[in-house]
Image 1: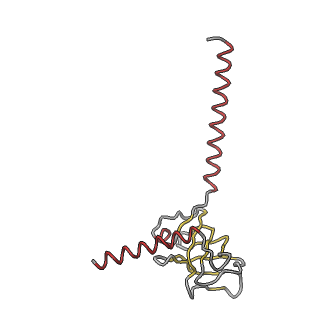
Image 2: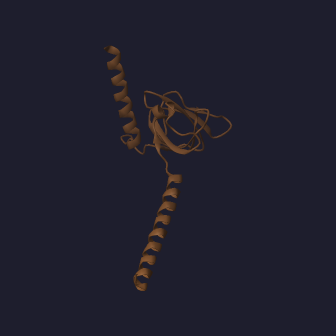
Image 3: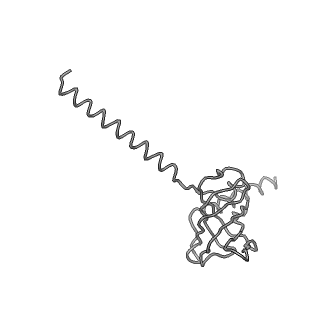
Length: 153
């Protein structure tokens, strides 16, 4: 093999190895920061990982909001009308947060089954529903309809 051709081949191989290594490191870094959405039905079924950063969302169940009198800790229940998950959040809730309204919470699911939120997002007007929450509620309704249909057979 000609020395110049051999040198070009080594340069190309070096570039390919460095590019592959960079892509691998980038993929690993992004995997650690991914934040997946889980509806309450998936969390109740045990499909959501514990101790990892995830998002959970649904409707705030009527009568479930409990505020601590001595701190900013708030507990409430999020439902997709087929399952529920208890959420605990310490901080100031958004102005549009209310019972019967859609929310998306970011945080970690504890071993005790309680979702410990670090951020709570409420819908920004009375007609908007976050796409993840809307999809989860539609799937839950379809699942309930299928269960009722099976039960009536």
